[in-house]
Length: 255
Image (cartoon, rainbow, N blue to C red; front, side):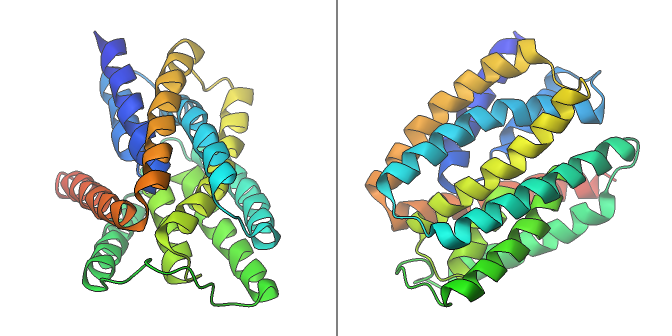
């Protein structure tokens, strides 16, 4: 019964994550609930291994349909890969430490993001990058370093934060922002997966079936996002933000 629940959670997580991020809101709690005996590194490793299946197919699908700014995207992706590896190493080093301060900070940031997105009605409607390429490249590297480490170490809402950054800071529309966020998010998932797999912190018999379901959800979600466009992505983004805020607030008040 637990495996069916995990497969369903992986499918739903892949669907939402391919559009606006936030799949970890669904998939990681499912792993922790259904497999309560896992260590934190093994739970993270199993979750991220499953997530990378859907992340990869969404990344490929967006690349076929959306024009990407490779000169700034590739440096950001490389920086995110390196920083996420360092974050995963830190998780294993501090596996008994619960990052509760981060939980409260992330909750405040998510509330601010949700309010800004809701009240700024035209946010993400138009695609007009604000910086010259060399400035955009430096901003992308900084973004990759910060959110890469965060995703490797803690993780909730990384894809959502990436999407918001590309919309509000880089002035991309929601569709282009989602496409670019997927590449950076793939790097922030791949790096910890390699580290956790090397350390033996992945339950392959669980993560591979979950990964295949995550992939199917991501394929459907990315197709829908490309077809329906910015308005659809914006409302799904707000929905995921509400879910993330609710989940983190519940965890926080139980401390």
